[in-house]
Length: 337
Image 1: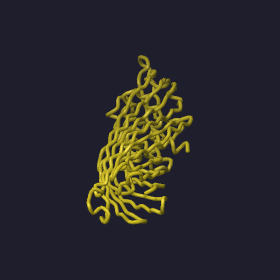
Image 2: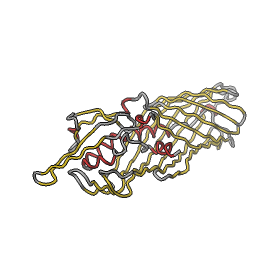
Image 3: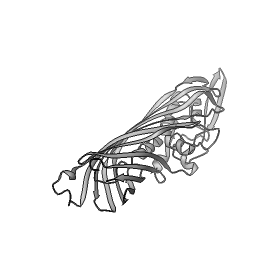
Image 4: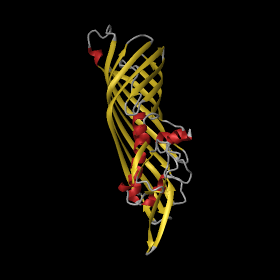
């Protein structure tokens, strides 16, 4: 459970080398650390936005007044074959101090989702007239190095019909805290069935509706001190907001139904690197407090197809979403009407 939560928060990267943590990059100076961390964490933030934004519906038919459904939903946003999200190009010309040990000017390195390991870099500078200091360290790898090729999420969701053709939805994950990780989120949504307004609604073979959903996530991950950078209260704090706007169509059969949707997703992740960082080795020794904040934004089209099995008050659904991060969503549902 601990590692699932770390993944869920998104800062759950097990770095390929125990001595190579992302805060080591501060040894290259705050500007270099900010540039690298932004490129390194952005794909992970994007994956989380796509993962938590799924599962808003399993039918184009809205629940009638008083109808309700309680769901346990799990999502997996995959990046196994999404190479552009697993790495990025680090060009030392864009950095003030960071250099590759092998003399390369530019090299493909791992993002927080990747699996490239053992890439050594260094920083060098004068600490006194005629006296140089050099510090070497290994760039962090990512989740794929641990054979993890997806970003998961899971939560409870409730839907209830409030009047003809309209239902409201709420999703929730209570805040869970371990020694290193704290995570929780909530969301609200609304679904309106347009076909419920038609005079032939009862005999119409399909249901068409619109869905709007908003999700908010709060999470923190505490850093472990390294030999290069010590300090206090070192952590990543992230806040993520996402919106989904979807048109949905489904069949209206008694037991097995099929549904699909086409829509638009937009999201934003704000990540604060907090705490006191004491760079105690290398040429740029300094104490830095709350060094920087990062912002990642996504937007784009999305489409999905799925199926739902209904057996009395028990329902089971699964769907596949095509987007920048393709994902699978599975729901275990209990409902009335």
